Amino acid sequence: MKTVITVIGKDRPGIIYQVSKVLFEEGLNIEDISQTVMQDYFTMIMIASGSDSINIRDLNERLDALEGDTLSIRLQKTDIFDSMHNI
Amino acid sequence: MINYTDILETVNMVQNEKLDIRTITAGISLFDCFSRPDVPQAVYDKICSLTANLVKTGEDIEAEYGIPIINKRISVTPVALSARESREDFINIALAMDRAAKEVGVNFIGGYSALVQKGLSATDYTFIESVPEALRSTERVCSSINVGSTKSGINFDAVGLMGHLVKQTAYLTRENDSIGCAKFVVFANAVEDNPFMAGAFFGPGEGETAVSIGVSGPGTILAALERCRGSRIDEVCEVIKRTAFKITRAGQLVGREASHRLNMPFGILDLSLAPTPAVGDSVAMILEEMGLERCGTHGSTAALAMLTDAVKKGGLMASSHVGGLSGAFIPVSEDAGMIRAVSEGAICFDKLEAMTSVCSVGLDMIAIPGDTPESTISAIIADEASIGVINNKTTAVRLIPVYGKGVGEYAEFGGLLGGAPIMEVSSFSSENFIARGGRIPAPVHSFKN
Image (tube, rainbow over all chains, first blue to last red; front, top):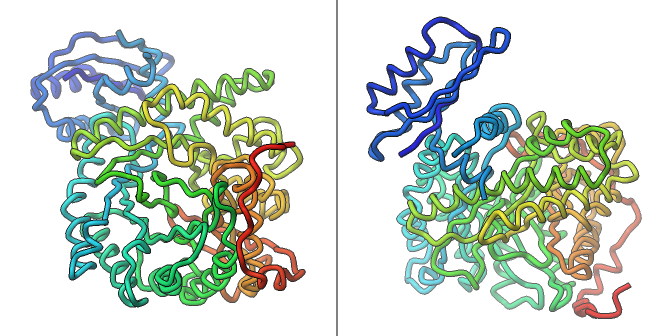
């Protein structure tokens, strides 16, 4: 199973650490990572893969707990992006 | 390889532009239940057993792909085909459908329907008599009746009955601004695989089960058009097509997954722009973004025609099976821009009727005065059915004659059904026209001009 994790919001110390810690603990391997900070806004996209048995709802709940008021974190299967943007 | 710009575009569509899958609708054939000794129980059991996982499946797909799936719904074989003997027998089926909908957790179940475009059998009359009480005594059951088709003309006897049915339903649900009428649609050229309520039913030509998807996304189209302000109309069409393609592809993926997980064949994908009362999720505002000061002014029909056509063109290639109503819905109470247009006097009933000749359905969720005569409602239905029958398209009428209220007052239905200012209809009578009964013959299919 391949997933895309997007993190968008106000920059603060430890975002990458916290997200990758959750992914590590849930058994996902980070294959690619890209991030930029524009003004105070942080945008990170990670591609991570793991076993098909991983429960995405639980994983998203753990990531949601990191969000706070100024950050949005989403984990989605890559198929949705493939479907919408590739023929 | 996925492009990062594409990823951010999709995330933005969901987070800021209200991209969603409007409905996953499971179609269930009830033909086998109609021959059982206890029909209501058989209906309840079959619906519950086949759709027990529908809501959970929708929620799982939503979580995994990050696309909101707003509604999970069920459509069934038109109940009039069960040929019950009494009104109560039919109402007991509606009650069983309502119980099943509550048990599996869906917000609407459609199919308390009859197909009477050519004629009315004895059981059809009994069924039609049962509809107002069925809508009063249930919460989630939706009903529809098809009164005309391009192949068979318009059943004028049935049209005559509809005015009484709508008024009776309005009276029986008068405590809640006649909300029963919001769950009842009169069709011409009804489609058998429509996943959208209140008009969904699982047609007699369908199989045992099927999963159909209704995509939406007025907000996404609106945002795309905001980015191309001032460009020529051809470019506007292209932007709509490209956006509709992406929205539809998301729907196709959800449909394929839902079909696999529910072990039901994939039915169709309905490419409709379905507005909600939420700000920024409005079809009227798309027309205004194209350059109209308010939806309803001159140019609105052209803008809507172009929008509907471009959505179809963009979506057709994105799905293996396109069906349902596919186009743009223009319900009044469910669209913030439309409500504003009515409140400000920018759009009148007649302009709405004109716009329905190019939209995907018809006169939808329009509140009219509670004292509108039955024959006037029937005549409105006859007008709308004629537009459908002559132009070979689906048309529908969902009117709410709000009991005890008149022009200038406001009706509130709540939730996705929204609310609407009460619109004026003609005060001149159509009584003698409707009283004639009979059948308008099928139209000629050549000599079109």
